[in-house]
Amino acid sequence: MVSDILRKWPDREPGAGSREPGAGSREPGAGSREPTFGLSAEWLLSDGRPFVDGLVLSHPEQLARLRLVCPEAVAAAVLAGDPCFDRMLAARPYRDRFRRALGVRRGQRLVVLNSTWNPEGFFGDGGGQDILPALLPRLAAELPADGYRLAAVLHPNIWHGHGPGQIRAWLDRARRSGLSLIDPVHAWRQAVLAADLVVGDFGAVSYYAAALGIPVLLATGDQDRLDPDAPLAAFVREAPRLDVHGPLREQLEELLTGNHPPAGPAAFVTSAPGSSAALLRRHFYRLMELPEPTAPALLEPLPLPPYTPPRRTHPLRVLTRVQGRDVVVERSTEQPYGAGGAAHLAVHEETRDPGDLESADVIVRDGAPDDPRLGGPGLWTADVLRRHPHCSAAAYVSGPDNCTVRARGHGLFRLTAAPGADSDPAAYASALHAWLVDGGRVPTGGTTLRMHTAGTLHPVRVEVLRDGLAAQP
Image: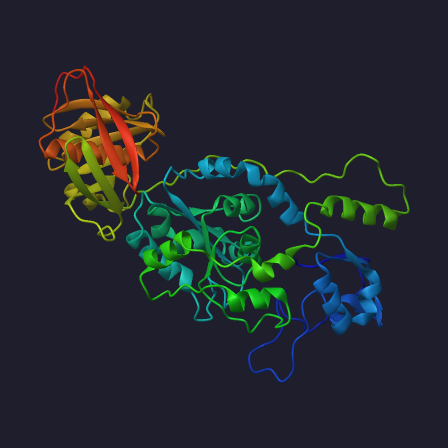
């Protein structure tokens, strides 16, 4: 989609007065249209002649525009597809693995937020368009934690320009509320493939997502820096918009449950899907005047990212409704959107404000079951209830499908996901707490609770544990 240039490096910089590379074209109010990055004479010509061995284009549409803006460079143009997009196409069968790597649970929707490097982008740098940092707390508040998973892809130049420490400081509360920051070099493609919905701007990530058939909402549609004749500009004009001042959950669900528009202009991402490796290798060997190997030309497959589930240390407000052994649970950083029922507060032990622990009904932490620093689930849960007399339950999460809960006045229990369950074990702990407060009692042989969250049933097995501690709260 973006033209790559194979250069015989000149002795000069291409265009002393050139602006930062982007997709685009003109400054607002400029008297004449700016040249398109990568397709203009200032980038391609030296003394009126191409200084490139090959200008790699992904679609004939780019070649047609090149003939208009810089006909002298047409002879150097090579149609060779898009290797980035081809790697994503080849990795589509592994979407479920990418979702599991991000800790996306059954029934959850993964929303990937992305920003290009531009003051008018989703994550601006002072152009009055800093929408993303302000939007993230609202997303965490309005979207149920068990119904949605949030991840952000920020252009590498955003990280480079501001520095990793500053980025993490700006997004600290969002990260404590469950946002994951995706590696912008090695893992962004996998995150896009895993997404149910992409919210972004006029950058390439939004365009790639649309080309893959993933619903896209644009949070900013500024087109002043885009070549108005480029397919990307047409995509930005036609893509649905996110009303950043309106209710967020309704807008996301409308796009997720409705018939989102087809890729449209995003179909211009490549004219040779799956063929870029062969086309590029053919061109390279032609340049070197060497015979091309007969073995297939292959691209490096996208690797499976490390397991990075969300880590929520911001307090969660929990609403529950109990009917028999069925417990409906909805959690968010604020009052859960559109929910009703009994309320309690669940707080991670590593919350930023230790005062949160004094008002917590359920205190949670995660760790290995044999972590010597904590003394194991039994000792840690007893210690928490001793130190926080107003807390009703302490939950030690030791795996992706289980936790140990000590409920004041009820004893020690092990909660394990039964067949068909796939939710955050901390939510299981909240379900048990609500059930016990409602009058439930766990028999000696254990029981099974039917937790409902995000419209999905998660059966949870509750077992009574023998407690070897001498003193129990």
